[in-house]
Image 1 (cartoon, each protein chain N blue to C red):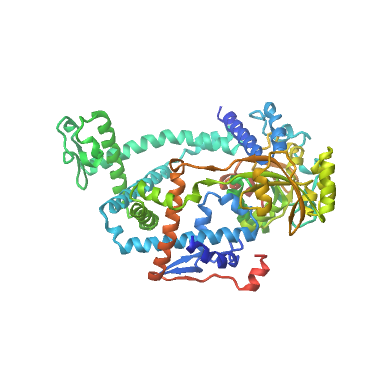
Image 2: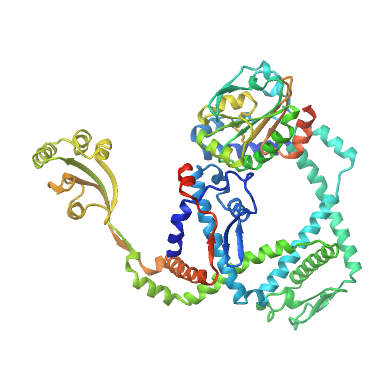
Length: 428
Length: 194
């Protein structure tokens, strides 16, 4: 939290440096984190891919600036974690490299499928026929076209797959999917590719008798994936940027996961944090309060008498209360939590019955008559019901301190803080 | 069948979106459920309540624009008008608007005039206009008054976004329900330009 607070004030005053998406200078460096830069386009990407992207555009400029500031802080935190992940060699781990490899394959595959799709075209006659049938109905025309193309695509895909299998001399050994199969059992081989049972089955499956039809299905699917990806790579399709972007996302997440398991190895760590912070479990007593404030004891005493004789505290408060907010709301002060109000009054609220009118309470603001309209008693929540919250708070706390430490290693330099006059101009 | 599905889905979407926006509009839209446009009722003459396919023969309407003045469609008489009904909460609207901004920039000199009709609070519309850099006029249609004007242009179900294309002589050439893509623009709007 400390980390968040320290940067918050200056970020709040941040220049609204991007008047609109179109006008942004995408390459403008907003922050440097160690040797790396966070640019305006990084931030715009984060805004646009956030769950509030649509709502963001409807906000006033100062609100947008605050949100941008928060997102930028988040980007900086992720960047710090990523740098540390590299330093710790997380990017050399077998599991990470495998995940990147799978990602690369799936991107190449998608690219190839897309290319196949784009090759397809309806004949000119067919196109004209459809246009006549669906004149003036763009959506219906598009739907009719794509349903015709879908069948063509299915056939083209099968033919292409067949062609690639032959070209790579692919042979399947489905007869080996029987009891006694091992992770090393070779199920498919070709010129440049091979798949073993271990590539397909999960670790838990090795000891079981394989479900032949399921394994076969997976075998064919994986082969198609590999063949199409290989074909795309052979054509020189480059997905390096996408893979790099994915790695950039993955590393901070891995780093955070690692830190979390280090900070919270088991529930005991949560429990001892919970025990050390008992206030977390407390839900304070809450009261819905009615109030009439008067300038003198005598007037308060007179009002109390009128209320006791049947007049309403709320009607009188609407007329006579010297507290202007209370007068405007006919004495209905809304809900208060224990600890939020004036101590002298709270003490009385605690012991009063609902609906009862208090005796006269003197504070710096005048002479008060109060009543409790409704109350919610305080509670203490059990640890079991609070585990997620405890975990979240513990991680937030540890992470803030941890990020502070990382900033010593990888200095963070904010390039985009407002000068006072600019902030004033923008009402922020 | 395809036609019917598309329209029903869009109508349902329209109801849903309006439902999320404001209760009155939603109630207004739901009373229209049974009168969803029939497939085939595509020419403006039969579909529009004023039984004309010429915008200049319809009763004029005037609305306040984001920059303050009152405007009516007649202000742009002689231009090829793309009148786009949108709202700030509507994601598909926000996807198509940047394309409209581009059209206005590219084809403004060839007589194209985008006109946004924002069915929403003025403040939110102004924020979206600023955020997306809208470079054409946006008129403000308070949601509670939206039903009449939308029906007038054939939008009984309150679909948003909804775009009406009016040729320079006033003929209503095309109505698009839902997000309008570049294909539709090239097919129905471009041929009308100078």
